[in-house]
Amino acid sequence: MASPTDASDQSDRLRAVLDAEIAAALDDLPPALDARRGVEAFVPEERPLPPADDDTLDIVDRHLPGLDANPPVPARTYRLRGRTDQAGRGVLVLHGGGFVSGGVGLADPTLRDLATELDAVVVAPTYRLAPAHPFPAAFDDCRAALGWLADQPDVDRVVVFGVSSGGALAAGLALHARDHGGPDIDAVVMGFPVTDDRLVTPSSHEVTDRRIWNRGMAELSWQAYLGDAHGTDDVSPYAAPMRAVDPAGLPPTTITVDQHDPLRDEGIAWAQRLMHAGVPTELHAFPGTFHGSMGFAPDAAVSRRELRALVDAIARA
View 1 (cartoon, rainbow, N blue to C red):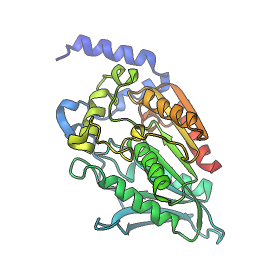
View 2: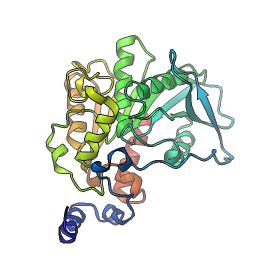
View 3: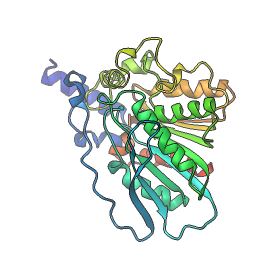
């Protein structure tokens, strides 16, 4: 067990490398992300409240049809009131949480902004979570939501937007759509994404501080999601996109990575693989940040830049 002095030294080292505004958020972080606690280390989302009234948006909690014998998929949808009949952009938003936690509630303000700013139909599914529901449960739920969105009469182009583990789901959907003839996806936008269960990059070994997303938590999340398949040759590329033999033919993709993130290098590696395969790819790296720090310090200038890069990528589709 680390001594108080060791913990203090670690805190000072982390603060020294973070953007000053990001470092100020360290004291407000959730309980320690200590993988030794098992799945209890993940911070559960509070039960989402019904959507608040909104004068400009129609916000509906609904259950989308599940695929095959799967149960219906809870989802929240957002549309501008009085939206024109002309078909436009649809955005499928896939939350993070290490495949084990998360949901629509924490992202609700961002989802409202997307629907309003982009005049988009926004769909945010609450997919089933591991370890109770390992792969492909979450993936199948996201496929069901994608199919529902693509079938909407006021949608003529689709963007899939995922952060963290939602990034893995987004890329997996793009691979599956390519391999199975649709639905068509016009762009993929990935924030600080999960892409590789093997955790073999330099950055995957660099970050161990338990106040921020770290190697132990990354290992734990993959174990929960993949079970005994984790780290073997039996992992589907629809679960871990870096397992794909060839990503050629995927939609234009935008990726952001955070500097002090065990997932930094795998996000960069996925962007490189896409570029080598001829996929139009845009990559942004943000200094002084940690995994998902824009959610903990949304008013920091670097957080605003990262969110703007993601929203602008959606807007271009």
